[in-house]
Each structure stands twice: as structure tokens, then as C-alpha cells.
Amino acid sequence: MDRAQLADFLRTRREALQPEDVGLPRGPRRRAGGLRREEVAALAGMSADYYNRIEQQRGSIPSEPMLAALAQALQLTLSERDHLFHLGGHPAPQRVRDDRISPIMARIVESLSDIPALVMTDLGETLVQTPPAVALLGDYTRFTGLSRYLVYRYYTDPATRELYPVADQEKRGRVFTADLRVEYRKDPDGVPGEIVTALLAASPEFAEVWGRHEVDVAHHHDLKRYRHDELGELELYAQPLLDLDKDQYLLVFTAVPGSPSHEKLQRLAAGIPG
Image (cartoon, rainbow, N blue to C red; front, top):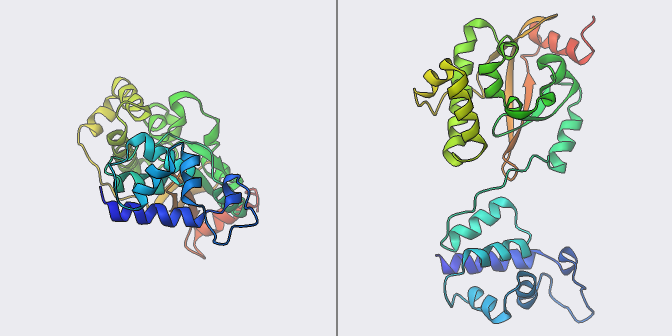
């Protein structure tokens, strides 16, 4: 526990909130901005004396339920909550998977309506696609069950694999498997564990790749090739933009300006004919 940093972090977060932010009246006698200590204590369901001791670097180590209550009272983001727990001497809680897209991310996707872009979870489930992304990849949002996850489809659905040239398929499988291992390490008893168990039973190829224990297969910034029924092969870069609080990322597909693939992307945006 870092008492000084914990006290400073709580103070700065308290002072960053206004009474209106948490549904409290401002009142005519309030001079300074931010919340008062007793207001934070009331919102967190603890005594004002107990909260005062934390900000004054006194008293016992706050329990995990107390830190969780403070995180909720101060409206902390997930990253801020994790930081609070570390300062308080506790491991960060397991994050609950949230498949809702943040308003900011939704606005970004809306502004990219003329280029292929999609939002995926850290497990490879596509939450939303722009029309050109659907034209390029197909509708990734229509799947149910374990098929929602790209790595599962890759090893069980031949149509998913056909999106990539045969020469690239081995590496794509390694990439998807390495990404899955990262998530499995975080949550082996959750959805990642379900995917691994199902794929080990369904795909000898997956079992072989999984057995290599690869965790670092470069892929985000390398050139990728995709096959399209009407346009043929496209060479594209996929730039990720990560939303840390949601464990989601935006993938934007681009091509070298003036290249054949760039012209093909323009045809995708126009509905292909041309």
C-alpha cells in the first residue's frame, strides 16, 4: 500500500468531480469546486472519519469492498479503478466483459462510413462494421455462440479461412492462436477457456498450434492480403485503435495510395461497380 499516492489520487479525483456530477445539490454556501470529503464518504457508504483517515494517510489498509465503493462513488474509469486497487495494496478486480461500444468509439466508426473499419473485442468478436467492411469481409456480426469469435471460426469454418490466400493461412492461424493465449492467461475459466476447450476437441490443427505456446506473433502492422470474390486480392494494412476501458479496438483498413488495392477499396466504398 502506498499511503501517500493513494491519498493524493483520491484527493485529485474528488476535486475533479462537481456535486452535479453525482446528483448532489451545489448549495449557495459552497465556495470551492469539487466534492467534499464527507460527500465522498456518504456516496461510498462509509463514515466521514474513515475516509478522512485515508486522505490523511492514517488508519488501516482499505479493504477491497471499500476500494470498490470508492471507485463507484468517484465514478472512476476501469483503468482508474485498477490503479486505485494497486495503490491500496490489492490486485485489480477481474474486469467484467462489456460488449457495448463507447459513445466516442461509435462516433469514430460513424465518421468512417466510406472505408472498411470494424470494432472488435479482445476475443475477436465483431461488434459493429462499416458497410465497406461488410463488403470486404462479410457480415461478422451475424454469428452466434462460439462462432462469434474469429479464432473459433478460423479453425472450424472453411469459409472464414478462404478470406486469406493459402500461402498466408498458416501465419494467420498462429496470430489468432497467440492472441487467444493472451486472453486465456487472463481468464482461463471464462470465455477464453471455453474457446480453447472447444477448439482442442474440434481441430487437431489448433491443438498443434496451441502446443507451440507462441505468445508474440507480429501481426497488427504487417501487410495483410485478403481475397474478394469480385475484386480479387487486396493488400491492406489494419491499424488498431485500442479502447483500454472497454478491452475493444477499432481496426481501420487502408491501402497504399495509388496502388491497385487502393483503387479496389474505393470501389468497395462505391458499391463495387465501376
